[in-house]
Structures are given as C-alpha cells and as structure tokens.
Image (cartoon, rainbow, N blue to C red; front, side, top):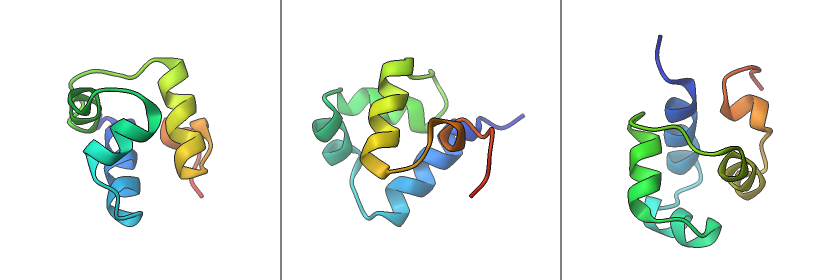
Length: 69
C-alpha cells in the first residue's frame, strides 16, 4: 500500500507552488522532516499533521487518505 500521506503532501506542495524548505520554515520543523515525510520514510506526529492541514487548509483526514475531496 502506498503511503497516502506522502502522496498527498507532495501533491499539496506542488499544487501550491511552495518549496519543502519554505513549508518547513512556516510550520516550524526541519527541511529534513518534510523530506522524510514526503518520501514516506517516517510519519509526522499528530501535531505536525495538524500544522500541515492548517497551512494548506485541508483536513487531517484528507492528508491521511481517509477521505477524498
């Protein structure tokens, strides 16, 4: 099974024309964390999922692949 979070994160980064480094700075994490999440190496904490969902104005359920738009 593909890591839906990684797929959705990459789509949001691309669709919103934001760099991984810029996203990291905006939500207060390292660029390495964003890279690891987007490559599916590790999963973010619930708090970081919340921050990403707030930044992109999507639900955490969407980020996790539980629902589609």
